[in-house]
Length: 527
Image (cartoon, rainbow, N blue to C red; front, side):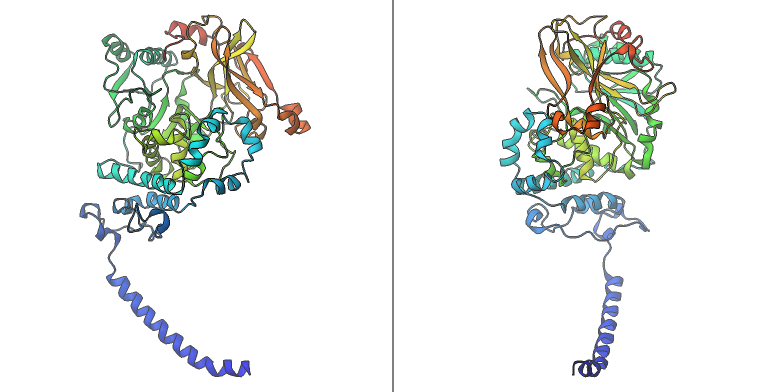
């Protein structure tokens, strides 16, 4: 009976389908002919005669999260210009990422970041000091608000006339960007400039400072004689009472006249001419053109940043140590520039800037990583994890590190792997009168025997600060006690902490460095 009924209905169904298809085709034709284009909704100065690469229409934003921020549930019209299609696509994807409650995120994130491991190598005062903020101040509505704020930040920069997406037509070439200007950083800048000259650096150098800084004429003259130009940063002010004014870094890179930038902190001195970084394969791969170096920790499983960005927790990457950055504003198909704008907003002043985002990190450094993750961008990382550089604490004969030692992106002739490149003395300025002088400043390196960036056993390496009896704050490296039970037999045999005199390092990269450091005005203490 069923087969007979199906045969009898078939002609009627076929006739109905044919009529329906004809109607749909006619209606679609009318829509195609009459529907206004995206260009017709934008200023006439933005329209072009042909936009073959325009993105398809973006999906509406989730009403429950974003209707209060974007009543039409679409991105702002300013971001819908065809030249910004890629940026709009990435922002739309970002706003469609799940928004999880605190409790839901813990279970979700533990799949890749077990608390048993996270609790061992994450800076202990981070979850202890900020755990309540992550739990109570970063709810679903707050996450939606902060994500919408990122979109509105870019909208605002465009309306102010700024370029937010880079391209190959951008002028500028390559150069070095430094920041500083108070009494201590100015003196360190002069030391760094002298050392770059010693290394035969030929890249142009720009120093960015706040309007009230670098007012000493003798210092300005010394900087000019060393070949650097000085520029006041705009759009940001010193934050009174702040521990450090990190907010200058992102805008300094954006406002520099260089398209490709090597950024250096004032207390970060390279061991050899760093200009080769712009031609390294890690920097150039897939036109990413952005390299960030690792810090000593990874983000905790409970850190609210995973929910804010919409990522699942991973131990694949370290937090960033931003004392050195290599970036092309036109890299990642131009979105590196947009990421710099986002990072600069996160480290800026106010409740939508550092007052909020710095609860998830210890300063400007990770705003770059989060900005890249907002846009789904990749970055390059050095082949080796950082080491600690310093000397021996005379009283207890214990290693006292005061410097982060970062590694090269390439392996030069005469080496079997990338050697040390950046001597970032980030604790040396905090030691004060500690007996450090020529001959005992940079004498030993403490490192892991297996120090590849992605080495899993590094999850049990612990770099922490202790108070030395003579030298003050000291950085030391050790294996977490849990390694004794968690390591395989092979890891126990191959992974260990080693302390090496700098003269025994492959290729002797430190030969003459300490003498040059003091001769060029190197100093201990200050800020």
